[in-house]
Length: 258
Length: 311
Image (tube, rainbow over all chains, first blue to last red; front, side, top):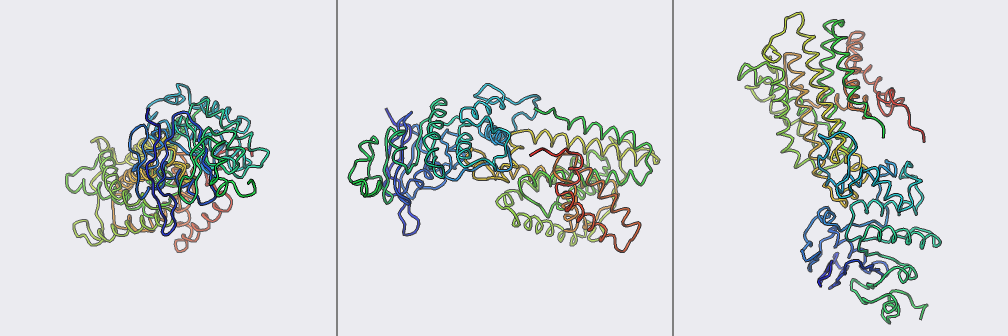
């Protein structure tokens, strides 16, 4: 069976810096893949290429057998490949619930003129429920119900991260790319946040690719690890094997474990 | 969810014009009609403002609407307000559709100055055009409403009521538009374009649509103003006219689709009184009024009617 998402020989350089060199990976449906590597190793570049923000210099990306390399970010998002951001990207002047409603409105109507001639509460196609109910359900899954009327700008860091991912879930993504979901979150909160994210994602049924620096988090949540170094994938294996790989230990995990 | 009070509010304003207009003197009816014309332009500016854009060139479409109305009279002898406003709106929409491909790429000061530049090019073209009356402009043919010429004593009243119907109708449609997913995008674009794109919406498309709607409203407003005044000249495209619209937009605030009309009426009233009291320094009075509004009502006059949200 063909993989859900396939990257084939991706190359990308910024001037003299090589951000991706022959990156090839196939992601199976319903898998949870952790991306590890030191800063500048090419993890975020990989995510940016898949979501269309960066175009690879060469190579191709296929989703369900279809070539999506040349598509714009919004078209890729509409296919069900969505991402969260390392720095939460929220609508800071809106409340938490309004953020969610905005996301539902954009993602499910493709921002058209739906509802111009209809009166009453708008329902969300695919969710078969009024938008407010869907918003409250997703917020509930992410433990944000108590903050629904707060302004997004004044949320604490960890909750901003959760809201950022909750917004992405509004589109019912098939593939969810999380760029450092636990960065900027205290060590005690990390596992709790990942737990919430993984449960919510599982409930909505999406394949997950996440970037993470904390190896404990990776080995607990990922089913498979892609280790990046210098724009290349140096290991592609289950967490146990990947984290014990000689190259990975030398370049990614750090010498003090040896 | 809060009940939508805007349709009721629009209906109340219309009823107030229909009934109150009977008691008002002729010259106030004229100010009222002009306020509806300007309010239409400012309503469009409000759409752009929601997305974080300020156009310093909305007079371009105001003037296109006015000259379309004037041209219709000259070419076909048509003086019907409804035909003129429809044609003015359509002409403005067509031009905005084309220019929008360029403007939707720009943000902030670049958007503002580019829109200003385009309106000044148009101003230059009309001034040079003998066929359009050059700097003298042209007079419009006598106004009819659905082919009927109102009695001279009633013409101002009939114009004000017709203007109210059309402008408030346009405000209602704009209000509906703001409830659609596309219409709601404005504040999201202002807040975070990256997020909007990654959610599968095109920011450029949304801005283009808002720009065309804003121009359509301005074109209709221009045609209404032209018919109401009975004379048009290139000043309608001059940058000071655009500035006046931005002035009214700031004065009004973006709280409701009714706000632009209220703001335009207050603007007209201050203008009239200031001009009457001191014809040589009326600009100073206008400036002071705007200064006071910005300092004490940063969210515009409309904030006077809105109870502040706690927190």
